[in-house]
Image (cartoon, rainbow, N blue to C red; front, top):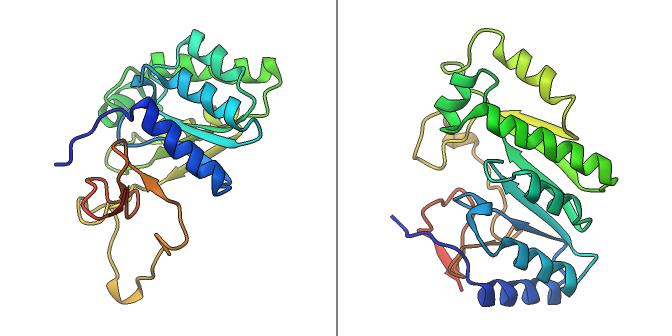
Length: 212
């Protein structure tokens, strides 16, 4: 298993500088781990803002560490194009089974963030995305989930989980009808925490390294 860590500040700045030099339209901060576990995330976001104020930046999180202080900070970052929060499950037990977190705490965090963005008149788009599993969701739970989140975000996405290449079997495979997603030639470029450039996000273990 490939080790994981936090991207050092100097490497982060180097990657950002190169992205800006190449006129990359959107820089997305995410990965295999919770983004806000990075104690230097505010410094890194400030560097992005100061380096190129008009640069579009998107974040992905599970919302567990976006407390009120962090939410207010994010609401004051107008350069953030999108904040995407992974929320799977409406029933507390369903949520815990999938996300392994306290549903009520996360819901409160996300609702406060949504309110803070609206109160500040922030242009940042709040997106909620979740996975749907027949064997995990309770009867009519998806309807409740959709009804709730449609009122508390800008974009709502729900899909069945991917297989993550061959790691899972959530989706049936039809090799004869398979088509390339176009990566890596058509992007996005996936830079790991240690600077390695891997094939794509579905290469979760970083087995196909294309450069550094």
